[in-house]
Image (cartoon, rainbow, N blue to C red; front, top):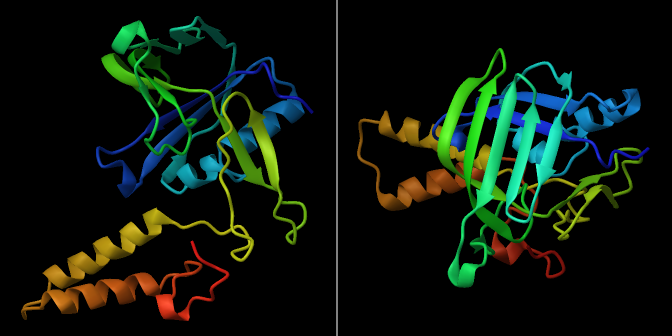
Length: 239
């Protein structure tokens, strides 16, 4: 089943400190998609197929119903524009860098974008019933990308399944020893923030060494693969 040529828009409403989670998400899928295509796109962008959208899904606390609507996408060399008539309009235009070339980022980690990201100016209007906003003269990014998830059919298989193979290859890898587990940075941040609150509530003074030991023990209590002391690590499994 092919899903190429179809358009999808993912809307997030997130707090100022995004890694704290509690995001809301709305998904718009191209009305041209047939039933199986709709199911596939819904599964990918809600994170059920693995890959980067599953990672982002860890921050989402509220998933609003997916909507299906006519969608229009157009692009030139320096401008990308998408419209959901009556609901959503967004456009980004590349920022000019040195020698009249597009300004780019090439070493910034971004789980959704490809290796090279083009800096741009953005303009967005949204009148969804749960998202009503206008952003003027904001920054934007666009890139060629490729996403890969994990096959769910056989739990003993960990070969990547391609979800999109457009442009620059940017594959999320998995360690065969972990059986597809990922390092969950959000989980670590949550336990460290809880530890900080606990320490702030203590009346007795705690040394820096004590604080560090408490933080390490809190993180080591999580089920994170390969979180062992260096001397305990077998030579053949090093991340």
